[in-house]
Image 1 (cartoon, rainbow, N blue to C red):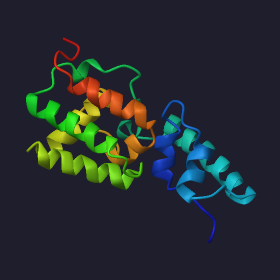
Image 2 (image 1 turned 90 degrees about the vertical axis):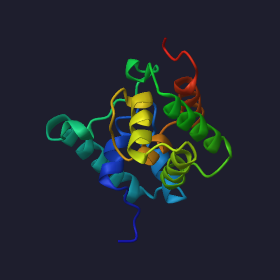
Image 3 (image 1 turned 135 degrees about the vertical axis):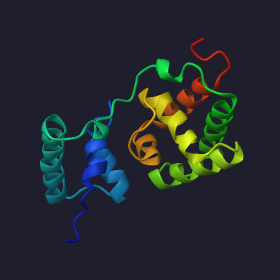
Length: 163
């Protein structure tokens, strides 16, 4: 019971994000290296997550972070741009890079730009996934490299985005 065990939904997200070392990520989230039993359990759960995604997962559980700014993010509104730029600034502030802190930053940036939370999350998902919805945004972004996230937010907020 004292062993570290990553939540399955989070694990299923991480195995879909290109370039994520799940074992390294688990150690970061645990706060120390995994012991041999934890590493073995993680390997089993990674295999189970991949099998679930390939066979049973609903479409909403399948995530594909786009390597380039998606066409769906081509024409953001002025309020979307303000939100995305504000979020990039908040994430530059050096706060801890965790799902919870990023989720809080999303809500703060939405409030500051006077954008409804639903519209803010839709703008965020369009910028990263090319669709208007997705998994918990803070945890999705926390699973990505911080520089990639900030660069993508700035690109999506830039005037003339994919003009």
